[in-house]
Image (cartoon, rainbow, N blue to C red):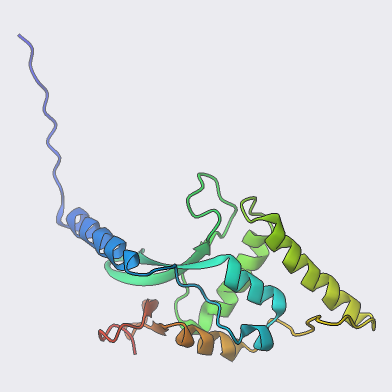
Length: 186
């Protein structure tokens, strides 16, 4: 006589809630035609050209469940090129606590991830390297047309531009959300 061992899976309320939140995220993100990024058309005249390239071509916005609050959706940013890779360089994503911390978290991403990610195309790396070469030549007194000598940029611009692309702080202080007019943000 063969006894069938049937394993019963007990789904806790938290697991069910997490699954439902995942489905909410999946449906919500499917409404976006293209993934939102940090780039705004005026970046090129306000912030460092290299940062502008990374904001436009590398960083991608995504909605995620807050790590310590499974019922809260927040916005994170990730490398668009390694998001589905099995092995990623460190700091491939970041989840700012507020709009004011985006710049600091971006710098960490740029220093720790951009430099090491093997998935970022060489043409993008080349554009960023060219900006650095032009900046160095400008510092040495050999100004090159089209070079950027701007630093990382006005930190206030990072908050302003995030608002311009449709992001806002959650009122409860648990991160950033897409401004939808649903009362979740400011």
